[in-house]
Length: 407
Image (tube, rainbow, N blue to C red; front, top):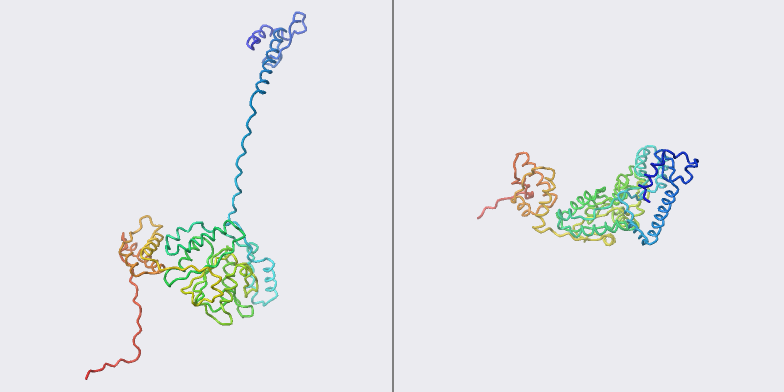
């Protein structure tokens, strides 16, 4: 019997729903149908029993359908994403041991009173971040450098390979020492400076051609009247990165006092194992310089000591071709005018002149900058000339010149 019929019956007995004890309602029973006040209605017993049977039949049918239905297919577990790789820009490497730093601080406190303020400043620099320095991931691609320095393509590939090892194997972050060798004017130093800018790490140049000895790297001894830390210490203590870039410029021209040979310091610095405990003489403290990018330059290999050369990965740099020079100059020009909405146009004659003179990248950079400045000053839309270069000075003849009369 449908619910509609039951409700019609309920309407008939609603006035006597509360009279169940009356003998006239002996054949009535309370049902599961309720009033708006949620009170059960008194319906004929036959109606109530019919409703109960219908409800039981519906329940059995529902149970049967549930038993016959196929088992639900378990949902596939979502793939587990690999844990994100740690950003090496937030990875720390211990460079200065806090115990060694405290020892230096204690010795300074008990040492010469006049030197205490200076040593205190040095200790504070080393103690920053508990002696740790950040390790930054280098760019995976150096296409920008290759575009600017097409004759340094091999160098860029080597750096990309070493950077990949550092990125994927944290235990192999000790940097290999590189040597860029080539004739003067090919842009070796200029390339390394551009690489440090792209890598966004600290940069420390050391001109070994003018260095007075090993203490340029290791610092002067405490026995001196004015001890000074070396370039390696300065780069790591005052900088923020353990994998900063140390430029060893003109390594083929190392000179200085024979008692303080620069090559002895280079042997310790260029070997990753010994660079991990490099000693600065001014503070008599070991520091970990193993992650520094040591990149040297040279014009020739002839004057480099064999033990030093054996610790360097040598990459020859050739003179750029005319087509490569053109790419170099155009890349420099694009960098110069990158911030101008309507930059002046660089004429082809200027490029041809630079190529004909085979200007080194650093010289070309200066000439292009002055040419751009002239065009902006004169409100010209094209750069059609560059400043004149002074002629090489020629030495006048020495002594007196007597004109000889012919007989």
